[in-house]
Length: 140
Length: 140
DNA sequence: AAATATCTTAGAACCATTCTAAGATATTGA
DNA sequence: TCAATATCTTAGAATGGTTCTAAGATATTT
Image 1 (spheres, rainbow over the protein chains, first blue to last red):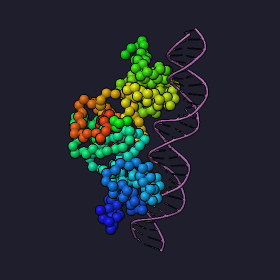
Image 2: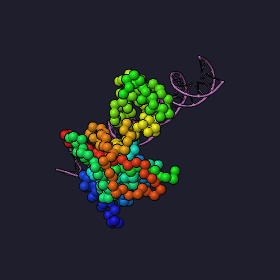
Image 3: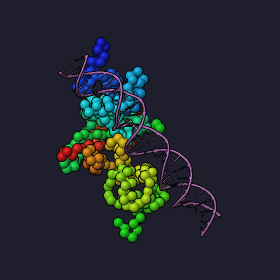
């Protein structure tokens, strides 16, 4: 977006999250948000960082992903036990989950309507409605 | 249901699954299916079995839960990473997930309609649509 | 620049789950 | 009924993703 100040956007993201702009967080910001909507696991982001010569520990990857999630910069998506995906798309939307590729695909939230849900259990209030459409590649 | 042949139902369940009626599987069948709709984790079922004086290893609990799932007697529900629930209700339905209690509540599938889903990604076909309504107990 | 607050890190710890391979149990077929 | 075969159960080790620890590094505030 801005070739002269490549970290301006990352910097402002960290400011809104009240997180100090460290080398690691700035680099992860760029990796996460410069490439459009993404669904990453901690391990995948770690590999990507190392491949891009960003020296960062796995612990920091986890810390950062959770801090970003708490700040509303990321959304956590659970579709399979033992694997956590972080989604850079935080708008109202849903997911296809391609089971045999362990891959997520966004479904725009605007066009999807979930009708007929009963009231939440007594004393509880809805925090989110997640629709996961599990699909299998027919080819296999 | 039948007080004189307490294992008759368990036995027929195992037959339909082509699984040998062992002491462990019969007992787990009873624990799982005699009490109406349930959502159990492997650990929880293990504790329950031990409490009921059913000597069974955790490995067998896992084996059995997976075999039952493959046979269509159970359904696996993923709502939180690192925790797998097995649901004795295998009919078309959805779930409330009470986040602060890690508890699932069934939502009857008949009355819920998910409209406006786009086509599955090229070459893929839908295997299931899961709706998870995350709720928080307002009290806390 | 000193004092303070926050961050990063390697490696250990953790926990749910799966694996291993050896003995036990169920089934089959004479 | 009994041996032969197939399947099952098990304790304990192994695995894999994630979190914890506590010590040194970096950023911020004064």
